[in-house]
Length: 208
Image 1 (cartoon, rainbow, N blue to C red):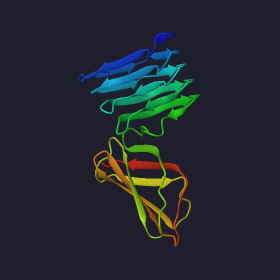
Image 2: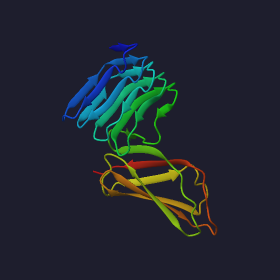
Image 3: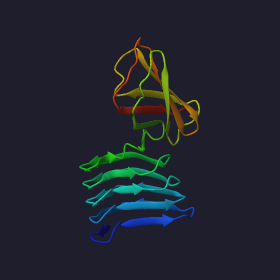
Image 4: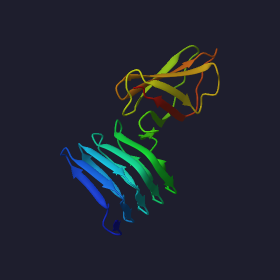
């Protein structure tokens, strides 16, 4: 157990080395700031086996290095003053599965740089992000990409968006390169559409 009241993160990683860090059956509480702060890590980190991150003065887990490859599984992240998991960089390699979130002030995950949720082992991956679809003329389209670690060419991609509620507005997606999903919004209505900002939700089914 790591319990820190006044001195910053319980675990503060700032190492460029190619490390493998494994954490299991550990609870972390830091009323001063983040519980786990990954500032620099060009390696892997595995968090599993019933870990808990709670009562932190900021985020339960904060990641600032896009090179870090972190898998968080079978853990509880709750009652933190920031996010449960704050991936503060784009194109990061953070995934999670079987994580129980509750009572995190800023939310479960930073939706600006969302994590990838892995379901049923590694066969189904689910991720969401915010997409403000630009104003789109009739019969025109808009494109975006989302980084999804583990996505492979040929995998099945299902996409939807909380602001797309008209059957004449179509969404499609595919794995355009390893770890990257391309999404297209096609306005098939007879008029220009300017939708409100909403959540882009992606479900990826991996094939053997």
